[in-house]
Amino acid sequence: MKILDRYICKTILSTTLIVLLALISMDFFIQLMNEIDDIGRGNYGMVQALCFVLLELPRDVYQLFPMAGLIGCLMGLGLLASSSELVVMRAAGVSLWEITRAVFMAILIMVFIVTILGEGVGSKTIAYGERYKALARSGGQALATTNGLWLRDGQDFVRVKTVQATNELFGVTRYSFNEQHQMTQISYAAHAKYQHGVWNLENVQESHIDDSTGVVTATTVPASVWRMQLNPSVLKIAQIEPSEMSLAKLRQWIKYRKLNGLRYNNYLLTFWQRIFQPIATCVMMLLAIPFIFGPLRSATMGLRLVSGVIVGFSFYILNQLFGPISLVYQLPPILAAIIPILLFAGIGILFIRRMG
Image: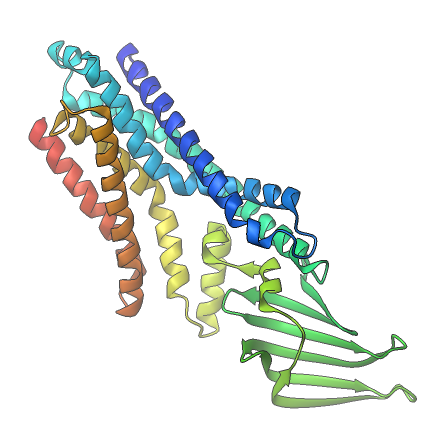
């Protein structure tokens, strides 16, 4: 790596890190304020809230990095432009594409590190954080294990294999006990959904145990209603949001829902957005180059930052619009994930070529 490349990389890395730290600090404070309403519920106190917000940070870094990268590149290149260093580089025969290459090297280093942090560490810490918070809020009413979710409802104990964010349960087993702690009934339902304050179960298999003789009587009913004193908010201890899954688990979940005839397009959309996120980050950061060498080459640092925020927000809005549109009109989710990236990449390349 040339001395000039290293110098540009160092400048971009340092300014991006400063911006990222500033955004993370603000995000940490906002997230902590959002937890105030939950403090005092069950065993959830200030210490638990701090731990929960800290566990969310790796994911937040991953989500905030595209914006931080764009603003960081604008700041770094803006500093070089303000001190006339970019002018000297161009006068010395350094082409715009050589400067772009040095910036891109810095981008690749940061994207690689942040992707590992977000996909490797973040997916694990956020899942643990949600379980940690839900367990504290439930006051011990629920417990998540590797074999599923265990809940207590009065004298009964309930095991749930899988919990979905739509208040749906899969693989529900209920163990009923009398006041003498003797098991009286075991019920199993393949699927349960929370509606109108009750749990509606499908394909329920019930085994009744006679107290005196111990004889087991098995029955099967197509549907049943459980009036459990179980608030769906407690289920967050094992709820699986698409954004919280690792890519491997997300792929497994898509395959599971597809095989069982369940809707999976929203999961597939999240999968492709996560796959293309590193590319989207690179595109966002490269957009800083035409701003510095183009219309904002003589602008103040404040105007450059505002411009970066506007561009980043525009990309975010476009990305958020294409997702729901693809789901409504049954378009391939991969198109919704890649079209905004291709659009902004095309704009960036067009401007760089015009200036080059």
